[in-house]
Length: 430
Image (tube, rainbow, N blue to C red; front, side, top):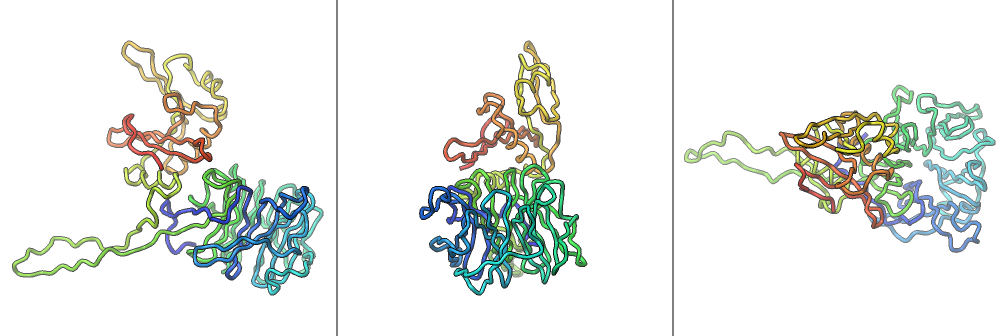
C-alpha cells in the first residue's frame, strides 16, 4: 500500500483550511481540494446557518488558496455534502432531516458550476444513504437500511446486496475506493471509536479489512481516508490537537536521503580500514522534533531511549492506606470498574505495605499502551498531578524504572507527554 513503510516518523499535518467547526470529506479533483464543512454560513438565515455545505480551495504544491463555497445548486438543501467522486461524476448527499438523506449525481464536466442534480436510481431507500464509490459499472455505497450503516454493492438495475466481508454489527461509513480500484477504505466503530480500515481486492474478492496504523488511527475518531498516491494522502479526525471538531489532515512522509559519499583510499603507507561505514539509506526527520505533534515527539524519544521494544504496563496508583483492595479502588475510581485490575503488595520496613494497582495486561506495542493510558486518563476520574495517582505507563530497562505520563493541557486542550527515569523527569513534550 505504501512505497515507504508507514511508521511513527510520518507526520499527520493539520491543514490550514480547517475551522473551529467540523471539516471532513476531502476529495482532490485536478487542482482543487473539495471538502464538506459545518462552519457558519453568513449568507444563510438562522435556521441554515450551521448546516453542512461543500467548499473548495485551489491546491498549489503544498499550499491552499482562498476557501470558497461550491456552486449554489450543490449546496441548495439544508444539509449538503460531497460524498463521492469518480472520473466523470460528483456525488452529493442532501438531507433536510438527520439520517434520512439521499445521494444525487452531477457530471464533473460542469466543474464547480453544477446546473442539475439527479437522484441515483436503484440504490435509494426510505433510509439514509450517505457515501458512495464506483468501480467500473459497479456502485458501492453505505446505508442504514439494516438498522446500522453497512456497505452495499450494486450493478445495473440489480437489487443492492451487503458486502459481508466488509460489514460488522456496527457502523461502516466514509467509503472510498483508490484510483487503482484495488483498495477499498472505510471507517468503522467496531472497536469502540471510528477507525479507518482497508480491504484489498484479491482475485476480484474484497479481503478481510485491516485497520490502518498510527498516526492515521488514534484513540479518537478517524475517517474519510483518501490516498491518491504515496505522497498525497488526506483523512479527517477529531483528535485532541486539532482546531475544532473534525479537521482534515494530510499524511506527510519522511524524506529519504543518502549520507555523504565516503571514499576509502588505500595506500601502502596507510593502514587498511577493517570495515567500511554503513552507507545505506536512512530516514531523516522532515521537520524538527519540537514541531511534531506531542505524541509523535514522544515516539521519537521512546526510540532514542531504547524503550520501543520493552514490555509495558499501566499503573493506576499506589497507596499505603485506605485503598487496601481492588473493590475499594474501583469504588474510589469508578471509571475503571470494568477494567481487569491486579494489586501488587510491597512490604516496607516500619511502614504499612504499599499497594500498587495495575491494569492486568502487558503491552508489546507502545502505541497500544498509549491509547489505553489516554482512554483512562481522559475519563477524568483520577487526579491530574503525578503526586496523586495519575495513571502512567511503567517500563523497566537495565534496572532503571521509566514512567510515561500524559495529560490534556488547559490551553486549547493541548496534549502533553513527559518521561521519568527512576523518579526524575528526563523529557517533556513541547
